[in-house]
Length: 337
Image (cartoon, rainbow, N blue to C red):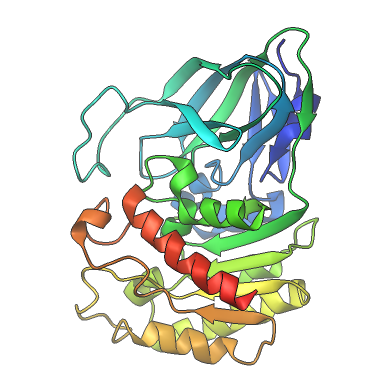
C-alpha cells in the first residue's frame, strides 16, 4: 500500500510544510519567509535550508514491511547520508550510501553518489511503533513510501515542540547516522518534536530569530559562537548576540530557552580578530542574563579534547563524540527542568 501525500503529512514531524512536486514529496524545515532570508543572505546557506535535518516519519502499524524510495540531492558540504529506521525504539536498519565502503577516520571530504536509492525494511510481526529519521546532510525527497496492503497506519506525534537554532553541529555535522546527532537525542529524551533551523557555517542571525513559526515551541535551543569567533569582531558579535536574544524573547516570551555555548575546537588558541575563544562564552552569558526564560549551558567540556571523537579531527563530533555531547548536555537540561 503506497502512502499518499495526506497520509505522509499526518505522520511527519519536524517539517513546516510538505509538498508534492512532480513525482516526489518534498519536506521543508524552514518557512518560506526564512528561506527568503537565506536566499538574500548567502547562496551556500540557502542550499542548506533544504537539508532534511530533524524531520522524522513516526507512526503505529501492524505492517511487517516498509519500502522507501528516495531521491537525494545536495543539502550541505557533506555527501554521505543515512535514513535510520527504528521499531519500538530500537534501530533495525538504515538506508545510506556508505555502508558498503570502509570509512576512514576523517570521512568528511568523501565524495559519495547522490541520486535515487531504495530499500525494503523488515519490521517484524504485530503492532509496533515505527520511526524514520531523515538525513541531516542532504535534501531527501520521498518518491515512494509503502507498507503492507490491508495494514493500519496511525500517527504518533509528540505533544510538545522544540525549536532548534544553531550552526553545523546542530544541523548534524558529522554524525554518520541522523539519530545520533545531539539535538535529535535531546528531542527524544524530552519527547518533543524537533524543528531544526540550524545551518552549517552560521553565526547569530537576529533576523532569523525575529521570524515566527505557526506554533509556539515549548523549548528552544540556541547554539552559536564557534563560527562567530572565526568571522566577527567582538563588537559585532556582542550586538548580534544581544539582538538575537531580544528578537527570540519577543517572538516566544513564554518558551523555555536553553543557550549552549561552543564546545572545544582544536585551533581555539590561534589568533582571530575577535580575540580569545573563551570570551565567546562570557559574552553569551552576559547578553542572556537579563532574560528570565533563558538558561545558559556551558558546553566547552561536553566533548573530550580527543581528536578521535571528531570526524574532521578538530571541530565536528563524530557519532561517539555526539554521545558525549548529549550525555553531558542532558544532565544540565534535567537539572534546569
